[in-house]
Image (tube, rainbow, N blue to C red):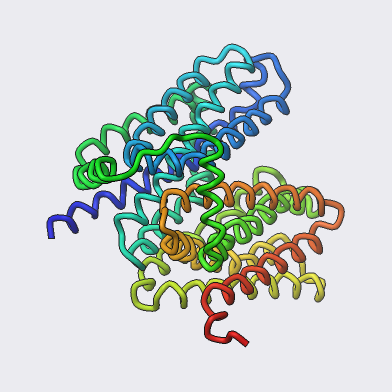
Length: 404
């Protein structure tokens, strides 16, 4: 009973940790013009600092699983937040674009460590579908957090200046570190046992490759993890295409653009709330299957608008809502179920972070490639992502029942 009471506040800490990591870029996006003037560079150069962040994030995400197995997930978790605070401080006191790039890369290293350790800790300490429930709660932040951060960052830039955006990120990191000191007593005991009884291996590039090679032998677990980049790719393809479609094709003013994002945020919040409420009753497999059904409903709705020539900014937004619901239902459950099928939870979490980065980047790249024929290209990409997701679901759950 004591352990259960201890885990209630832990769930809120996972949500706060996810919010901090998911908003490290969006906090300063509204301040880009002001930063360009201060540093004496172009706006494109400031935007390219995102590359330094995601590059460091992906690189650390690739290695973080090995580090977690050697030093413990909790150690990696706390070290990641200290590094995030350090990177935010570098960015806040940057006087040249070089120091800004360095600060963003340091933030990316910390975010990669925290991202992997969050997934690993949740899956390690919450059994079965309980992990899906907690991941659904943290998943509510992935879409809502960045939009909220842009709104806050805009006001901070207007009232104080661009440095306040990085100060907010660093302050959130410090607050989280102090909040977590008294909350992780049980996790610290388990982490110490793991370090005392675990094997210590030399960390090198070859050992990382050898450990990753073992993951690819688990085809059913890998197929569930591959749902992550596919569905995220669809989300990012739509998110990257929508500004061009609304503002260029339908002449929606920039100040009205955010109104079309509100239905998506509310749908994601509601669907994630429903998912974490029903996952223990219906099971992860049924919830993932329901999510894939919703993905196809969204694709059919988008194609119907195109075929019937009923595309407007409002109908385009509303038709995508089932896809958002499918994302909310299937992402956290496939993540918890997939990672649970591997012997090394930390390494599987590390692979998941890399796959998510790849899926997000692929979705954005697809949006730029289909720019000339945005709606048809967007709908085709969403259809392929949904179809492949359905096949991966069948491979993970249904194939053994129907070997023929």
